[in-house]
Image 1 (cartoon, helix red, strand yellow):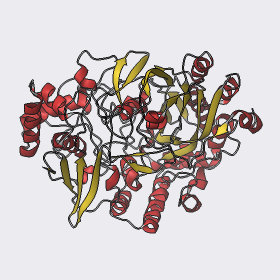
Image 2 (tube, rainbow, N blue to C red):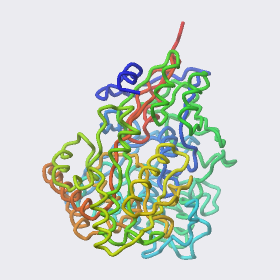
Image 3 (cartoon, one colour):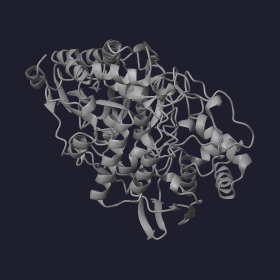
Length: 594
């Protein structure tokens, strides 16, 4: 299928237009039905197990934050929830204040305890130094299989995004509605690293066995402030595991939130969100209910839209999906490029076969990857103008991308070079290296990519085998599980310092291939304290070049995106950043057909 067919079908989304929140009134009895491609697994989307797009979308719809990205994407503040401001530059301090009257959906006030718990869980400041949680994790699912030893505190939060620089306990103030964070040194992305997470009163009640919410909150605050190891160990364990479920829990306190919707139903096949009567912010919804259906097959999602079983879909696009959408009556289809990008990463250590411990072998394998063939076969039929992504750091079209690509060394892997790969293997003295590739076997695009890589690498003497698993996300970073991984990541922000999670040697989350380079670590440290944009670009370009030189892996392409909805709903405006489709679900409205 050529561009003309796709163009006839697709209506391009206008990226420069963002919908704004309004004081809507819920339309009694109204429901919008949405197909999503992943099932829900955890209400805590900040843990290594829960950090997946399906969870993040539902959590975003049911919880408010100090800021969020719209569909341009541009960062927007939600001052109906709370405010933040820099109160000191030396030392660097930021104060967060919850707006008076903001409540959890159970009626409990959102307060300083909730803010303090979020810091404790995501800064890593209270974690037991040197503790390794690997032996307590099921390698197949990524879940913890047993409690940690007595005396161990381990919050499995997202502590690699900059909040770890707040090593001192923050100060609660303003009648228990604010928290002031003091950074060890200025941090360029401070505005993106902090928000309210799980309810402190619920975590404390469950972890400490207390019935009274106020007393439980007080006990949690005291435990954090006094660094009470015995209590913190219990609090951390419940924070890590207590919100993992795939069906609606009997204990409804586990699903309370602060956003326009609350989670009121959950099965293996779908979820139900209902308008939150306690919500008083600017994002009041119009639809009373949002019913999510978990449909992994893109063509099945199109069929559900055609049959009127769902109103909104955002399937992974391919030529068959685009063709199928032609047969859907009264549908609006939005297309463009999405935030995620497909990439192939190599394990620098702790791999199944140890193949890529040698940098020469890494470079040899990367020369065999048929990047252009993969693009031509899978993406160009949808986007004729699609190009290879050739930076590990910059988005195509972003300031700095073109300059980085000219100098980062990616040109060495722009086309397949079998003879060059053979020469490098001979130089390394390696014969018949084994590469077991981790990918999602339920994703047709990944299956096709695996086959193309397998065939091409065999020409140079590599034997590529199948390490695929439907639990691939949980297997990332697991010792001995695979040699290379093929997947995509959906960015949740445009943080300059995001490279830290992927490339810093001591990154607690994101560096799943054990990449380590002291020069890159030093560049990342410098970047985190640099506010000047031209200097940031120069540092990022150096990081990009170093990562390519180390044979980290290869980026392949930006995801194409397609969203379709019928004439029962208006206001759908997908964002390239997580939570993608549901970022503005409060703006969706039923269409009155008279």
